[in-house]
Length: 193
Image 1 (tube, helix red, strand yellow):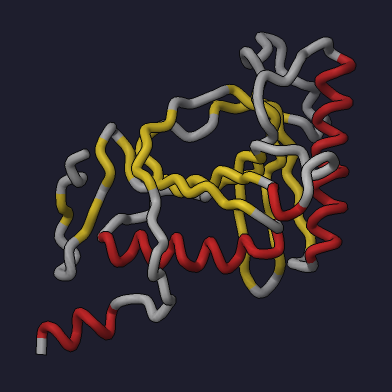
Image 2: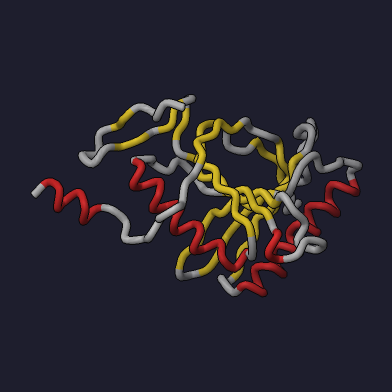
């Protein structure tokens, strides 16, 4: 009876050959804007491009250079659509905050343990990859601890679609240790290694 209950509680997604790496993330300062759109692939591309353009224009006007690859933090992905923060890493958060009516804001990103997957290929395949990541995390006993994010390691404007590389992160804990839960829901320690 316990085995049956355990098996029924596992995700049905096929994760054969799928794995994620447990990594420790350091917070980085970012400039970002919030955005939202439907889950249509073309609309996502247009909305993200416009959002990154807005952040880039804001930074350029203030002579602040991005210090890393673009990041998209997913704040909602459901039947009503997609909401996100389009962010660019910067060296430091400026002492003087943006005007109250400015859309661009600054913050520190998540710090702590996360699962990392390197996705190679088209962005349209990302929802299936996220489904596998969520299933893998559940089966391994990891408890998500915040919104996932993507770091675009290659430029979609100059990289063939099949060669696009996206680092995907899913926060799984805080305070320096990944939270894992066993079949009974009890917290387990992080795996060695």
